[in-house]
Image (tube, rainbow over all chains, first blue to last red; front, side, top):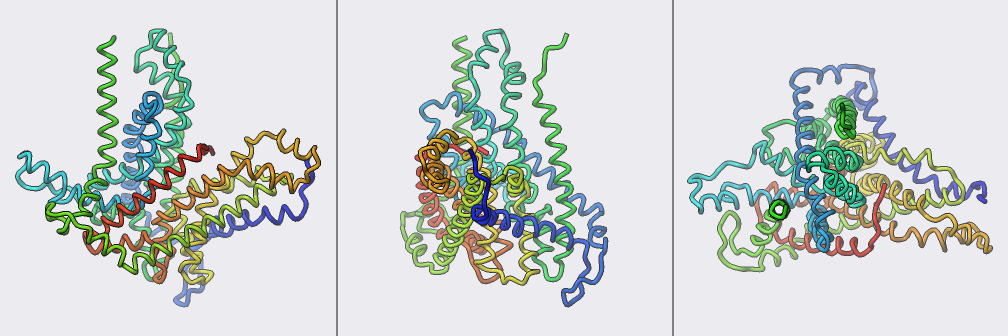
Length: 286
Length: 260
């Protein structure tokens, strides 16, 4: 028997909603509006305009968006390729050390990520760890230039986002009924067939969650490309932060945020459809 | 068959070790150089603790550290209080199932977009940027975690427990505080910890919403990195790594799991 909600519980429950609307949805709507608004020098709204949007609809900026999408997608795929076997091994083969493996995975994840960027400087620098080892082994004679490159950006991205992929995969594999795999092997299924027809489809939820947890934030990433790539390549996050923090270019930043947001939504939907298709259980035909 | 199995074992061992090496080599190199007398890129020469000494004398750093603590605890308190309030309303018969979808947005919208939107919002309503705006921004981030996690656990609670309490004459208020809330406590602790860490380590929201007066630890580290390599940052890293391993241990000891 439930009582009808009275005024007091409502008053206690409502702040969360107000908070969420006021500090989440209002700002989002605001940024959409401000990309269509022309401001006078005093900061008053003068007129509505499509100028800001049009300014960005050209090859240069579309390329920036494309390279961000590519960065996010390749990051998600690379993370998946490492995370899936890792999550599988921790969940099914880890046994006693399961918690240790998870612990070692989460500790760096819970430490300020700028420190990891800094740590990678030590590894990739001209006099850094890798160059030092390679020189001592006599494999190279001059240090390899590894920082300020797309490769350095990619390494850092995978390093930082890996736990975002491993944890949801692990959660779904941990609940996975291992006897299903054994049944498949017993019935003569090869490793690949078992993986493709049973393991992948049945861990679909975790895979999708992992992909989105990596794909969406990597799209807006601006600190890693700037610090590891040395400002050589432009990404969405770089452009947005430059315009938003620049003097008097706020509405341009808003417009570019809006445009890239639309691209992000569309590509996320596309990714969802593709993943659903790929993860469908495939039956024997004929 | 046996040979195939041991081959599989070896290759999985190699794979796992390589992955963990990838994760830990940078950290270990970093820690080693926090004890070196000379600044990087000089090679290892002699053991010292002077960088740790310098670290603990850096007033600005500890100010930034304190700010981050204030922001993270306030954001955690706000999002936890608001989240529990919402659950309280649901427990008293309020219907929140439909409005709940609103909180999933925080996970879907990239943080950069949220940060940029909040910055324009704060500028427009003329709230000066600083600690307050940072707390507000981080509390929104926190709500997006607290509400879905706690509500999912609330839905899983055995309804016969609250029914028993009501049948035995407890009021709805007593039932909430004596039955529902204690049952939710592990989940509440866990999500509070999660929000605290997210806020404490947050960089993107802080970068946009801090203004020029409030310095958080992330922003301070950024400025230290930009001015070049300093072993003080290495010393800071080892202190922070130690603190976060303590937190992770605490997290593991809770033995509750998070589900959305």
